[in-house]
Image (cartoon, rainbow, N blue to C red; front, top):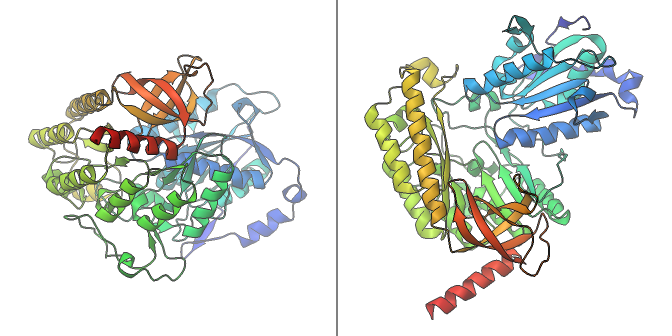
Length: 532
């Protein structure tokens, strides 16, 4: 192991990093200017889809700086872990992974693996990751840390530890950084993540995201549409628009005059902790433009906030066949008392009105959600109200986690984490069971129907079967050959007849290859015949 010294070398003045001299120093190095490979790196991503999208951005930045990505960690000089900080368990997983990497045997020509911690955990823990801690009687630490808005500094961070043995950190949050000019290095496949905005302004009392991802800022609409056009020309069949609060998208990069659309229109009964935002292209403009690029390219988006689903947005989703009719509506709790304590900006009743309005506007809608078990002050009655909400809405699927107190949040400073761990665990299990039951009921309602699926991969259990997702986001498993023995390929759209299900997957028979336009044209004709 080479000697190291810790140095936070990206000093900051008024929140801006000062490393001009450092850049000049590096640029004088022949290795920096050379086209030769400067080093190899291995990447692992944890947590939300934004981290997987960020991994593609980081890959592009490092590739352009002549670092090579490898799939075998034994061939890597540096391991990069893109991390989550939403819950304590997510961070503990990274500490354990670091401990494993430090203790794993290495090749003689690469005796020391440098570890970089990227993303939200880096932003939250900062120099504590460089100082390290003991895991199983072994000191474990990172060689450098890099926050979500500082990936452009990765080549400098790696160069500094690799060539000079100097630990470093780049952690300044930005009000402008969106990486709009970076072309991600994506895996070849039918679907692509596309980050459209970053950060969150909602300041929910339990959530660390505003403190580790910063304030909301959005990519210019033109750059997003140009990238979607490029993806369409490359054969991508589905684009997933990403953001911490994706449906609060607001592009103010150029002066626009959109009349009433320039003012936020929240769902009825919802409020925010920030002032009403005015001006710019909004989420409805983004959805409109994105879905107009290619009528046979699916558009999905995640993760939204229920407050931004006004009727105009819901109506557009209903009108465009290529905008998936799957809405993620994170409820977090079914109790108005707990929702107020969470600072979610709505009541149980207001949330249910959004659900009812969405169901009335969008046919064949599939709704998913997130829930927290055991939030501060949650009573048995509050918990039962959450269970009843799950039963009432009939979610297609959902996610739930026991509450994990995070420092810096309002809950940390103003509330008491007073629910014992065993009660949190018990309520968590009950929420999971309720969501499984709801998902199974939803999937059973699809038996006998025909669904459009995009083929994503070979089934994990059998090479004779394929896996894809229907419009509502539920996974379907089906044979890889049609009845006429023609083979279905990954990236094809297929019409499926749903025959059976579990709470997690559908079993189906493929009827024919199709397109979005053909499928919904056929569905409309079948509906007209049925009506006659």
